[in-house]
Amino acid sequence: MGAALIGLAGREGPRLEQLQPICAALVFEEDTSTRPEHTFRVRRGAPIFGAQHGAAGATTFDDRCPGDEIAIGLSGSADDQFVDRVSLRCGRVSIARSRSFNWQLTVTPTGSTTPRGAAGIGETFTATCATGSVIMALDGRESTRVNRLGASCQRLQLSLR
View 1 (cartoon, one colour):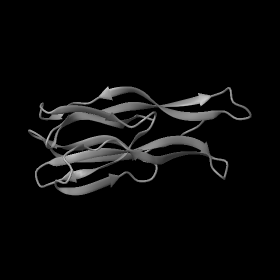
View 2: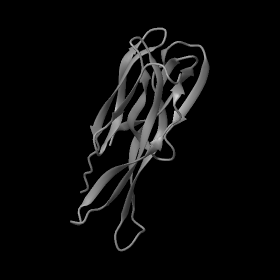
View 3: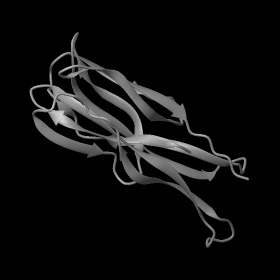
């Protein structure tokens, strides 16, 4: 299934100063003890910390989607020069039978992490992955602060044999 974004660490002051992505492998588990049919779940593996981007001052934070949830979107605010505030939108991945009795993987939105950075500066933005997709990577630009931020989403595929 690959790895997906589960959180953000960084530093915040009067603005968002630094970001570090936190990812985790998505682990597919089968419970063969259930009857009459096996059950399946997707859980997160150990956290994988990406590179830090931006300045090295201010107050640190480490915000992750709860439990086995993963990131499905970003929201925050930005002006012409900097990303001022950011939070992750989280979702729960589940596997269940559809009405046609086929196995189906769904991603259900659940909530958001704590917004980090300055409130009320810049224009607000929300970027949400398409239905059934999760954030697999972040992209952007940084100097002494975080200048631009974007996300790459990918649809999760379920292949049972």
